[in-house]
Amino acid sequence: MSQIPANLQYTKDHEYVAGAADADIVTIGITDFAQGELGDIVYLDLPKVGSTFAEHAVFGTIEAVKAVSELFSPLAGEVVEVNARLDGEPALVNSDPFGDGWMIRMKVADTNARAALMTADAYKALLGE
Image: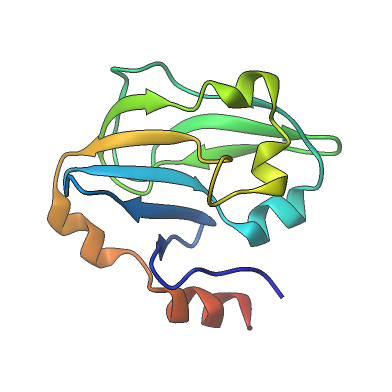
């Protein structure tokens, strides 16, 4: 069974959104379920600070030993920080997806859009857990 923290929001594409003290800034990564399905992660191609993305736009790729997958932006906004540790330690996504394995921080264009994201219970239902 996957870890699904109750304080996060989720997408059908298996990304999570974590809020911060500043309501306009969110942290985005992939879920424990997603990293488990991918297997050992060996490389990430993440955007540069200042890049902007529409909701559901591809913001990068994640490469595991056996597969490459696209990463989809849960919300529209501008990247304000990228987890530089993932350049040298991509396996952090496997070992700590909700902590040190986060991918980007984004300034959200419309904070009300977060209401459309799934709750932990809805994500559990999607996974059949």
